Length: 282
Image (cartoon, rainbow, N blue to C red; front, side, top):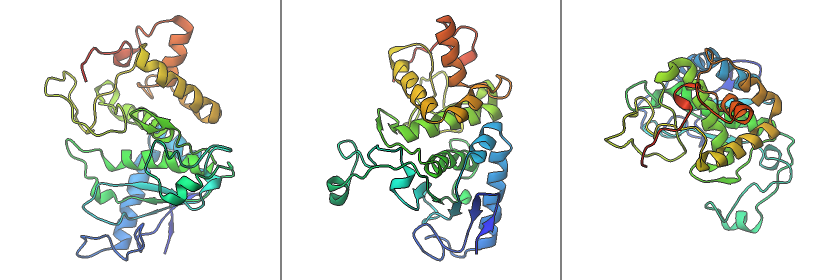
């Protein structure tokens, strides 16, 4: 039985992402308790101006259900229909850069941009708030960015080095901004979609997130990110403009604001710890 959380988002604890009646590893399962945990997590996402914006831009129904295995720290977003969820004319599968089935290789498909409803597999209980862990609300925010793009027919799996694909770049960028609202300049931000621990000598060690710290600033590496930000803005102008306009007090880490400042002045000085890149070996 689904429970509506807002105009477009529902939760259903009665069946897992893969169709089980309870997650594997759960001795007992209380669907109502799960649904309440998701409702609390979504409330925290919506209390953040970045998270609230993501939720507001979801255009079609999204249903959140438990992931199949309780002990697995996995969350996954899947479109109910493939082609409508993807950027018009763009391949759904880039088989030279990712694992594809024979059928996907034979027919990688093409997006229509019509938008589709979405299913998210996510269990808040699998993401306890603890040192060295990504908290549940950030996981949900990340998945809701994917959901938002599917519902608007703007999902893109175009390959992107270290981020795996363009959709992960978008989700990581937005979730880093989300995180900075809560933690300010103390926030340790996610560098990419890979999962490596910080080096022991790292002067900015990982706190709550298990990935490298984020570095942002004028560099050859950043040129690639600037190009991907340009594409993000082109595909979702009103959404990214709303992110761009968020003040430093509301959202200290704001690559859209940083990019505009660098283009206007040729410098990122004075923009805080995400200005000139920190010189670290990786």
